[in-house]
Length: 69
Image (cartoon, rainbow, N blue to C red):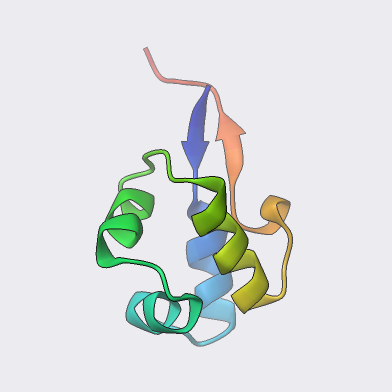
């Protein structure tokens, strides 16, 4: 299974936020944001900071999808 953060990007659009706003407000590194943009794994600490900042749950920002072969 692969991780998709499409829900996060849609949520940022709904909240009229840019990725740089999220980076600053959630106090996450540019490297972590870059990994999210590439649908790579990040720590639960990073995901927790994002959820706290956006006042949402993990289900609101990510989902597992089948890997393409």
